[in-house]
Length: 319
Image (cartoon, rainbow, N blue to C red; front, side, top):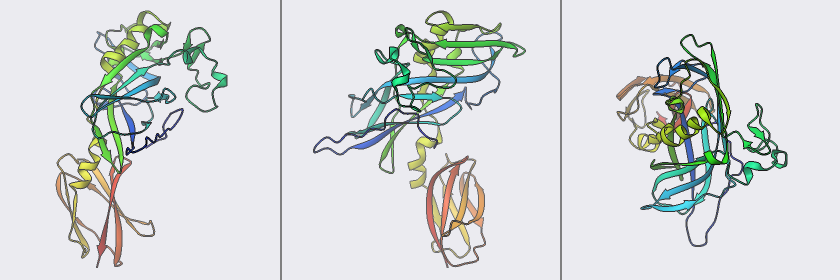
């Protein structure tokens, strides 16, 4: 996964309790499609066609819901700037949790930090100066959300919505279950940016920088519509790894790989112990009998991928 945009990676040790790292993953979408800049999409309005060229926003003030509705507040020093064209994983810290039931967070920057001087923030951190800028001014504070693109039937109208303002600092709750994998919890959330423009008339283009009008509607849409528990395969990684079988072991040059039904359209790469790529195969549902030619006896590493992201590995012995 790509690097996290967090101001501080924090772990906390409370005497006598086991602490588990908790991470929030955001999967960026346009409807059911993966997000990409300049990808045609549409909101719920007539002639609501658009292509986004910028989508950035702040996430702050996180809260973890766990173990039958218990609430654990994440330190306010954990701040993320989310860029929709980059995979986003936010390290929330380590906590005494057994079952994660949901996550709360705010879009924007909380006071009094919202009105502080960005130049005092460490360079390269989310609250320092960004390019393009995410800071509106000393009085108004940071841009909570910066959405830009081309809209209208011919995609030739300019739309810029920069939403900000303390009155628009909302909390959002997503009841997404945490998945435990390799000793860490991952809470996986989808963000559908079609719904960021819900009920916003963009047919003739619209430019609003501020706290009101369409910019305020956009921020409220983030609160009410944009986020949902993720349907991404990444949230099922642990289950898929546990239910994937490779046999016979030891191998005699031919392997059968049994995969779960939700492991579709993915691939496997076979490496020797020097790291040399030997073969690569696509996987389908159920059993995949691979005719592989392994010239040398010994151990090989099978890496399982979703797109370009490695999910897990298995080791096999070839006789």
